[in-house]
Length: 253
Image 1 (cartoon, rainbow, N blue to C red):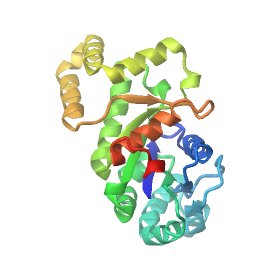
Image 2 (cartoon, rainbow, N blue to C red; image 1 turned 60 degrees about the vertical axis):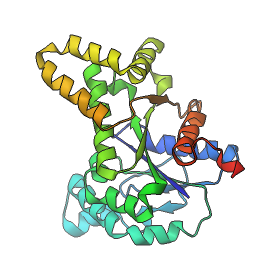
Image 3 (cartoon, rainbow, N blue to C red; image 1 turned 120 degrees about the horizontal axis):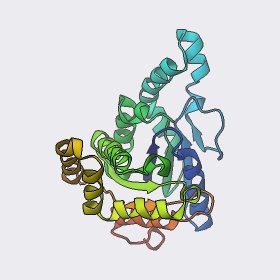
Image 4 (tube, rainbow, N blue to C red; image 1 turned 90 degrees about the vertical axis):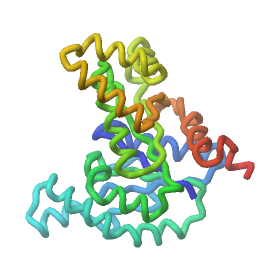
């Protein structure tokens, strides 16, 4: 099994990408199962084979501990780590090529608390990949785009896994802006120049941030995808194959 964790900020499209990539895998003959790791989600576009809500209920945690939604989400995240072995036992019942994890809506609950690291280590870091979702509307300036890359790099650092960056919702952004963001991802020097030109006041900080991204080997090259048209799903599949099998198709193994 290969474990793909869809991670990103709230509203970046984790659930819809999980659904679309799962459907793409099925249509192309690959056995994948979607897994929901968000105990507070009300509605998701797919039917999860395994659902953390079977073990943890946000509403019940709110009532039991007299907490608001945010505090309860933190408690649920910690409970998620405690249920890692039960989660693994359930998933092991399936014979799937890919396990697609739809992580909690708030990035920090999975990336910065213990839950994410515990679960990734439970299933095996060497078999895991983070698909970090970057929303175009949060990336239309050099500073905003670099901020997204830093979140991706920190997530990779925290969880210790291979990472691919996905530029989501490309059908919802104009073509010129899309080309600009993709170019920044392909050409770090161009991004650096834009960043320095528009934020010269903090040039030393900007230079340091760019160096950190390069030193951490964060993959800034983006895979543009659309959950509506499925554009980029094959590229995502190929990137995963390249990480684990050097590009050899799983179907031929």
